[in-house]
Image (tube, rainbow, N blue to C red; front, top):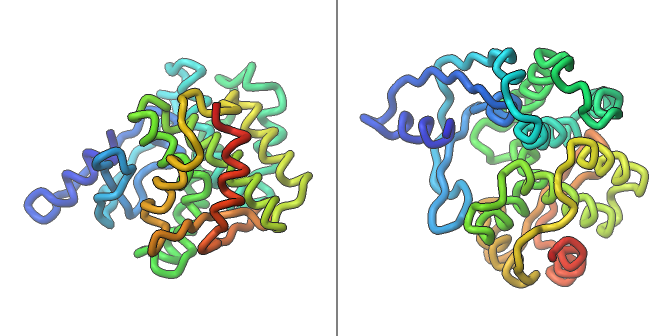
Length: 255
């Protein structure tokens, strides 16, 4: 809902101020920084603006009131930020999540949210209008997640979709010769620890996903572009990814 409110604030009367107080881990760990968007005709976040609230207040005390599933969903974004930018933060998450979130209410939430947003803000500051490719690092796992959400008619929760999108993107990264097996295993251990899905629970075929990937905002000229991992803490954008490779990887994760 933050994106919807932010988009409306960005266009109403050519832009009005917005104060944002997110109350979920998803909204805090990946809060609005310079971009807001809404979905249209099952395409995720294709209409948007470059816009930030005048102030955002992340009170992590709200998180303790949430069900564990909401914490799991929100962790998908925190894990993503760590994977694309910071080996140190990834290692911290590995240590914190080793107990499968059994004691999640005792986590240092101020640290987790702050570190996640620090990474996001650094990537945005380097490329505020998404022209250099740096900002696109935030799309790791999301290009596939957008497709899966659309194909589920938005019944597949965003955090679940991002988790599965990272699994698929990690396999593609490895198949392209970038990501080492042990780094892929580390990524997947984090996703497993927060109980995000192993497979897409809706009936679709790879060609349907590929069609969505070609129409994603990161792709160009009907070619599939994806953010992949070179290693933990380092990402890159690969243009014109081979459809055959994508199809082969997708078959492993589709029901």
